Length: 416
Image (cartoon, rainbow, N blue to C red; front, side, top):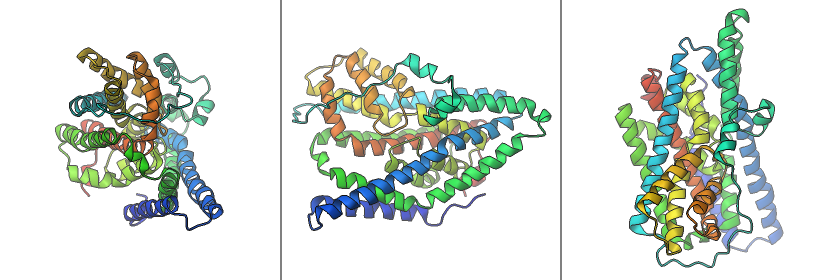
């Protein structure tokens, strides 16, 4: 087993705290000349954070490809692949439905949009999304190199599965060529370790970049919406995932959340489920004991279709904007919001603030004012970081459940 850097979680938390402090000092004080402050923001925070995120993204496609191919090519029972696929998709869509339903219930009870007024201007240009037709079509790429270059994870997963199946069927003709993919997968896991050794510095830059640019004043706007959304995200991450883990696996919840701290911090700092894939994969396999055949499928798929945090935002934002506009949504419309949030989550890109794209679709469906998205975007940055942490926690929970159901969870590693 490849060893992770020592005291990594402590150092990441320290880097996050220092980033907050330094960013806040530079944002709220003027003791430094503007030129020096601009230099620090550009060449330390912005450049450092961009380099760190690029290094993480650099590994996503090759790591997913080699991990998935090596896992599938070594399978002796192909029926298990179909079982894993069905269970994974069913669990992801179910937790997303629970997530958006929870946000709608809390929003309808506490009414974050009642009596609210804001002078925030609407965005100059609304984000554009793609429909279900395009989303399904993108799973079957005409050019796999282009799909890999654009980080189209569903397309990469689909091609990796096909390649792994072909390799499995021809292994006896290629002198066990699958062993080469196993070795390459090990090499990329070592690359992950080499990059996350710099995580404390990367997280310092990411957090500092956010604070020095926006400060913390955004919470003064739409405070009730922000507070309720954070509360629902916390409830879903702690209560919902705890329940499904207990019901389906009876594993130790304390162990799960303790081992997921590092991944959650990574996700918080990057705001991208895709950029967190290398760290999530390593943690799920090495610390939670999930078999690589399961992890290499469940985690990349989860980074694309498991958008529980985004679904919570969409539900709460819809209720918030409807109440702010004096529009009462009916029970049927609430059900429609759940369905739309679940369906659109499949096509939501695993990148920062992608949820605002699918929010446009939901608002248009019910004739709600699109200009109100300006209010959501004003407070969305920090909330997007929290949502991503929820998403990756859900990815790991589903990976444990699926692996346990297939007898592919090493409980000795999990409980270690």
